[in-house]
Image 1 (tube, rainbow, N blue to C red):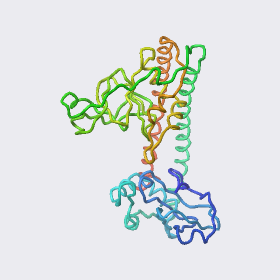
Image 2: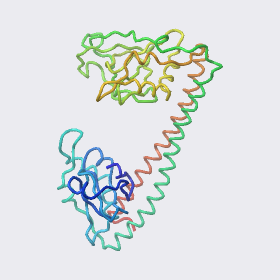
Image 3: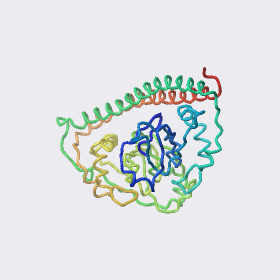
Image 4: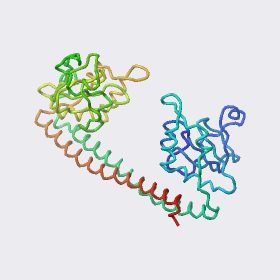
Length: 361
């Protein structure tokens, strides 16, 4: 399944194994076959491609593939592009069945799928036009994605420069020396907390103060004990896959037990702490101390052993302000680049729509 790409027309399996090892347990396919993942989320993500350059012209793969072998009247490239449409995936997602996390598109969906069938020469002409257009779009997408990665790298470099300046560090401290978790568990059914916002790890967006899907304790019908927080604290998610989720709340509320409400001491600026918790060094440290199978979390003892340089409070505020300005500039650049990627994806789908509605000549 890993060899089958997204937005990649041809795929070439990387592993070669003996025929006897694969003939009974894997799905057979050959050069020129069109493979499509049928399981969630691979199907929705568009894992699709044409088999090519196989050892001896034959291959074996996951049972989660649907293998389609075009007859002489149908071009493999034409079929590939027809299945690349959002409309194909959206309709398939609606008929999926099975347990959550293991839903699959039924075989009948593929078998009953209507497909336009121009003469073979017409199909090849459409494929050639799409190949040329998508090659240009792929170059534009790769350029935008590279610039997006560069923006992230630039921000990390600015943080490294700020936090690695030995001339501004007064002393080294552990989080335990300058931070505490002094919030107490509260009953969210108490009238005092019913209308307070409730934040869990899933509400928190990495890299910013943005929040998603925030509801009150009353709306979420909370029953078990939660932590109380206010606008002097930093909220840090201690559970995977949200270990880089950090928020500077500007309101009071209650948060789940999967979130640490951290209170900085008088000698630690809250914004400085926020950016410390976003450094690559801290994230790697936090992950190294995660435990519990299935959904690992960072335990409090490990978290508080993290050591970092502590400048004077005025220097902390200056450093935090510098990073905030850089984050604003980088976020603006990222918004532009993400908009470009959306435009490229939309243009791709527009071309596909025109190709199969007779508008593309």
